[in-house]
Image 1: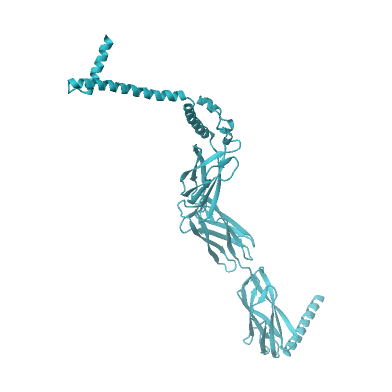
Image 2 (image 1 turned 90 degrees about the horizontal axis):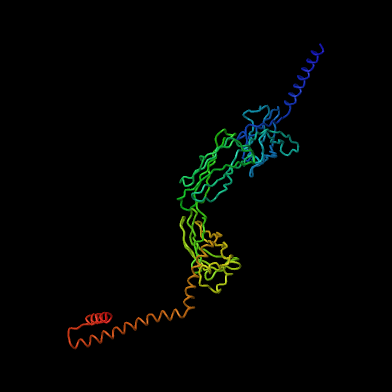
Length: 467
């Protein structure tokens, strides 16, 4: 019973309040503010949104000289050139919320790019012109974050032809909402640069706001590729949660094929104090203006020029360079070359100091111009084969020993010369005897000859031996 009485009292109170309100509205003007629409809906962080505000008089009396003022707060900002205060004028009473006489006010505002997704309030003030009394209404606007990604980094800008190189791409989420289900691919239309061990496409499940994802491909540039800058086309696809459509980003990057090369240097031999080295281009790129130098270093001294200009050296080619070198310190230069040489060559070889047979590495600098026009220097340390040095020294010592033996024995020189003199005397005596025999026999026989004279003398010599 009590509950029924309470319900009846409540209903009567509501009816009385409604009657009072209706009477109040009938005798006054009452401005209603509503959001007609927004474009786009929802608004996108970082973009511009157009807001249409409906102004209606739901009271019984006309509302005169009505002013509407937009009071934007974060994350909203009125675009420059647009007025926050607009004059509506007079609105008759009992117009209804969306009647034909409803006044529509348009505003263009920008949403802060860092705003997170959600519902935000946009405040609108209404008042009579010249009055300090105003009413503030709040309109709700939905905001979504714009998805955005970019390929911000490629870790390799140079590829060596014929060499497998990891190529890393970094994809960054620069938007204000996570990215999902991304597909990344790249392509070189000339097929000079190709992936190795996989295709040219990779998939990413998720990238959070402000995060990045790294994708690595093993790639190789054609060994026959001309040194040049080659274009790589990049493609990134992902689903846009706002439009529910696939978004595709297409861009391009440049990768240089060519660049530096490498060399090998090996000791070739020594002759007459000249040390020879084989210089070979073991890289995949030709080198131009190649110069080989012997830098200042401990243990070695250069006699004469310390550099040799080779010129161009293609990949796989080699050449020989020579320098006049002397070992300093405890090496070859410590040998006293003026030591007395013995007649026994093997004994002399045993007198070569032990420090001489030690391997003595030498540093060489190879300076060249690469395919990009850069001047590069490569330093190589070459081990000197001591057996070649000993052989060269032994040969030189043997040659010198032969000369010194001849110089140290004058009697041998005299005997050598006397042998030829004696032979000349014998030949001259024989010629005189034959001449006399010829002249004597010629008087008796005009046909007598030198050959007949020689035969007669030989016969006479044989008869004399028999007697």
